Amino acid sequence: MQAMLEQRIQQHFIDSADLNYHAAQILSKPLAAAVQAILACVTSGGKVLACGNGSSAASAQLFAGQFVGRFERDRPELGAVALTTDTTVLTSLAGEGDGQHLFAKQVRALGQAGDVLLVLSATGQHANVLAAMAVAHERDMTVVALTGAGGGKVTAALRDTDVHVCVPHERPARIHEVHLLALHCISDGVDTQLLGDQEQTT
Image (cartoon, rainbow, N blue to C red; front, side):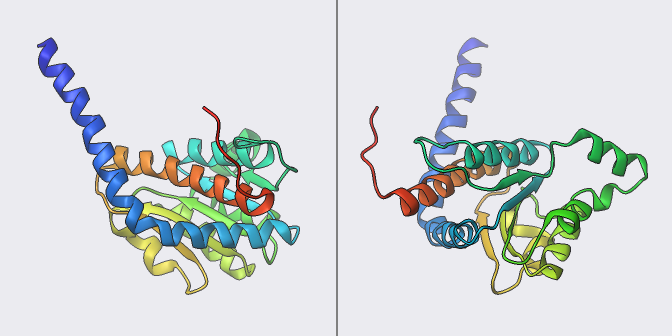
């Protein structure tokens, strides 16, 4: 029993490593485009609004924290807001039966032309994410979408000026793992563009 459990655990690591290696070649171009879109936004005084559901909500919050604070080195603060954190707003909207517009109303209230909406959705099917994208487009915002499993309905909702980072996998756990790495790549890419390359110390 113990040996079977250990083998199963090892397989998770192997599968994740295989996907990361495969995804690196596929996602490097859209991730570079995401860095450029977000960099253009924040250097023009704009901000990133990030949203997602469940595990993706946690990733959105992590990104906002690293953007306002720091990723791996000190730099000036950058504007980012996770739309998943204000419990008063979220429970007010949910209490009114407006769960589908949980993020859209916040984008309408906070978003401006030139801002970026960062959406995270493993399936690309969440109605509240799609509604937020529609409002972002009304506001002349760029959408950076991190998805998986083919991108779902998010794919069809994207414009040519948006950026789609679609993880080539069906399993949500693997997709979320790559999303986290993708967010680290974006944070590192923005820092490198702003501050220059720096030798990483271990």
